[in-house]
Image 1 (cartoon, rainbow, N blue to C red):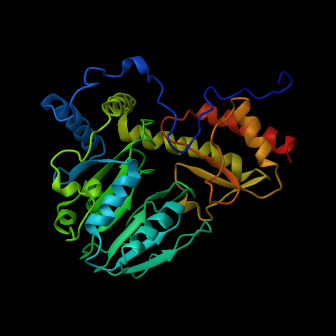
Image 2: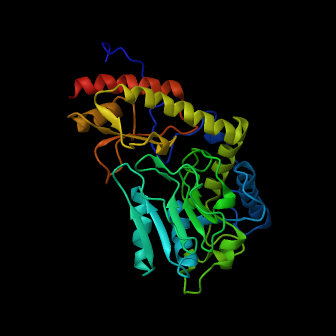
Image 3: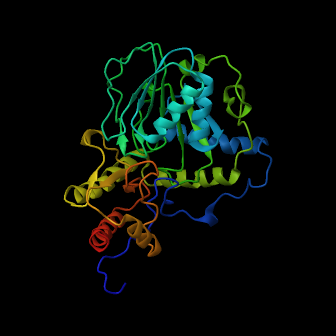
Length: 356
């Protein structure tokens, strides 16, 4: 290794989730006061609710919207939404990543009527002529493909149906137009660098009134619970509290957006001139500010490359999503440092020539 010129990233964690912890995070700084306590004790409930209120404030979620804590990360939250809210109307589902594919499978398992518009080749499905009477279902940022819809200007203002979105890779990264979304779900393992396990559901009054009448498994029956369905991890909630502290201290949502844009520009500028990789998303307008997904355009022994990068603590977990084309997927979220990304690109250049 002595003959290699590039400096290593100070932190090799570029995973798309769970993501790198924020600078300043410390295991010893976790609030241990509530560990080992009954989760329905009044002070525990207040502690948990306080974190949910903080999320509403940081993300500028309207006061009239309700927020629910769910087990099972974003997956558990979305399953609960599918079981409780879909069925009254036809659903228009826009699918441009593999999580969108998974949600579509669940809709079909319940025999729901779906107008599915699918594109997994790096282009956006058609957004034209979406009936206002339909429910509308989409993933804001496709973590597996690096595509983001970016805005909802294509939707008509007055809709009979509800708008439902998986915003896991968009929460704390985009300024979400809450007035146009009736239901959103996310976990805090992405932009915040907090531990996973729990998911969040945010619902408008319209969405709550749209609940369907069908038998729902207890684990998904959040609308009938005034707290949490099952025992939350108070260790995870304490971790969330510390990550929220750091996020706010660093400048909140405005800073989060700026960091992501600056990080993305590092990868974009490098990839635009690179002969070995190309951005999977054809139209720059729909490229997410995190993550970035690049596919190989030249033969590369990527198995050896990824092993080398991991073994030498240069980059962990940057391989493409398991169902996607071979390539590199890099998280450029608020906890990632620009200089680490620059160091990573230098090493990738070295690896492309070493393992071609």
